Length: 359
Image (cartoon, rainbow, N blue to C red; front, side):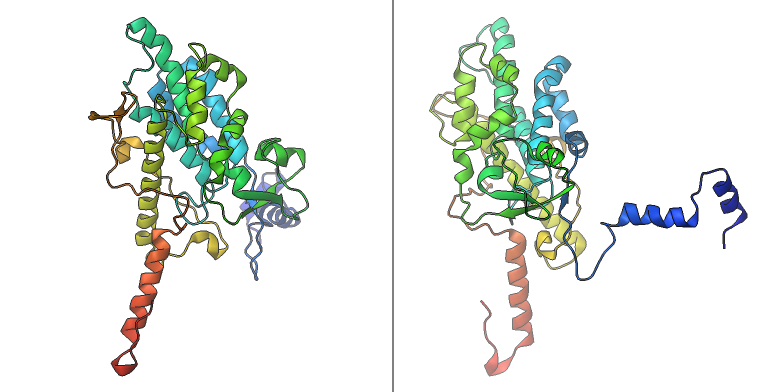
């Protein structure tokens, strides 16, 4: 029975009538109401601006690192918007690091930011005077940022297939970003599928995909002092750097650091939830968690001045970061933990002559 307050609010139009309320609930919650058996409604399309707001800590720290609002507005922020347009909420891997919704965008932004921070204070080319440094370094840092945010961009072409919910329409990353494709076809939710035998195929096409993130004006600007920056970007994206390449080492180090930080956050999530560590996407539901800490909290390693590479730049040392190869199985520590938990449970429940080792 409605209260006096309810009747008054309905009279002045601030509270809809019961029929209107039911229709509003139906329209607003139709996709979010749980059903049995579960129905996969796919991943919702989000505007690039909203996706960057979800990663505002990275955006703010990047702006602080650059310390040039005009440079940020002209080159960095448009690249981040185009990146969010391209990858939307796709994960970075199936069962390894950054494997949940938004993982690829988050990982790419982390690598771009942390690569720049690791390279802070390093001179490029033959710049020796303050005037030369002021011209050369901003271009070099932007090239480093592009190589960082684009290092996994080829995955949207080689590793993942995206369709609408009916599987009638397929997204082609070479033609447009995922957001633009969805808007052009009236798609609100999409599904994605992992390709088999992925390996490192994405390295061969990341250089081709980066043009969807870099503005032409930005590409022209970073090549203002010569072609080296553009060459280094494409060498780094293909993981085939020349000995003179002065950005690739920082991209690799930042990539490894981002992977390590995310795997640590997954382990913390496992302890907090106190559940068997099963990969969340296999449960058929979305799992929200806090983004991994940025460099201020996690402590981005700095270059070691005592270590020198062939090109004369300081190296970044990561003695405890595992190296990942194309032949390495895409298996997370959480899945290995689940295996160990199952093995322990079996051993505890068996005894005597019939006790067997579960492998």
